[in-house]
Image (cartoon, rainbow over all chains, first blue to last red; front, top):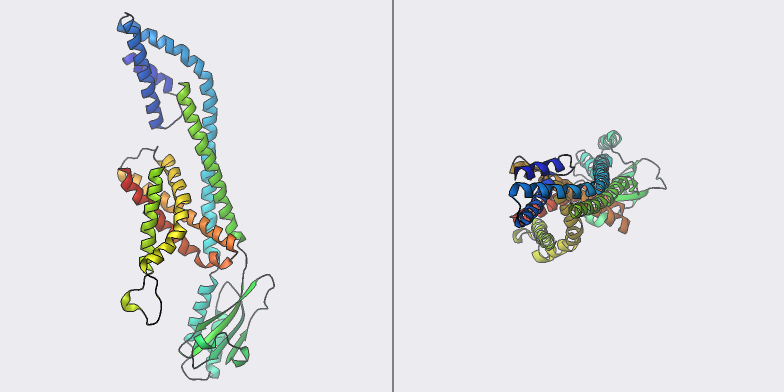
Length: 245
Length: 140
């Protein structure tokens, strides 16, 4: 029986595959050989002779299948390369996605931050003092947001922001003029309460495109297609190797 | 395959009820004259969106992970768990991103993706790990 094990090990020593696969294939081959040995023994040969005859017969068979095996080895190499390539595509997609997620401006968050800063300069009385206006202007011009302000105005309303928004610019207590609105971008108007009676209204250019998100999206789709091809190829190779041996 | 579908269905139920519970306003904090959805209807709303994502994205990515990871031998159970945990988490984020992109493209609403990308990715991460742990129960 040791001879059989040695033979099987020699067949599979250069075989490319996972441990589990090889173990499975070896087990299958072993059971085939043992069956053959039992058959020959039933014809009246001794065990030693039977093992030798079985190995000789099997040797001829493996020579036949060697050609086929070479063909499959090429395919296995291709499958390995395909897997590596698709995983690299996936990793590049991940990098692109994290880059986009970090660099894309969150306009809403920026607006809330700016209105918080302005709220700190304002008290509850119904009028803005010159000093307060000066402070507000300083806050706006020093604010380093990624999206540009077209227009910012501050209002006083007894009813609060729910009733008064959107307000007419003529009623504003303070107006700040920023950039010209760009035609390719969408102009967004948003209002935020500063305290119970004051509120701020902001107009901003908001980029109306998601092309930068399309890069990681496309990469992930490509990964999906490639990995599907790999899965199909892999199951096909496994199936045929089992049939050949 | 049937096992995977059952895992996907179970995870949908768990995820939807978890999300509904997190979005639920308790009785003590409710304002008068305002309608609040009951827990099950919020859960149903979440299930409507998460079920197709689980069935398509969840099952296919879990199949892929099985193919890639199960063949490898690990020194310890914890190493296997940790590896699968990370891979499931990352694939969950990616599936959530793809889902959000499809929503954004079909509705042509830019604010969908600019406003809620990070929230969506966090939800995808959580949802994927729910799927993983449900499948761990089924593995034994």
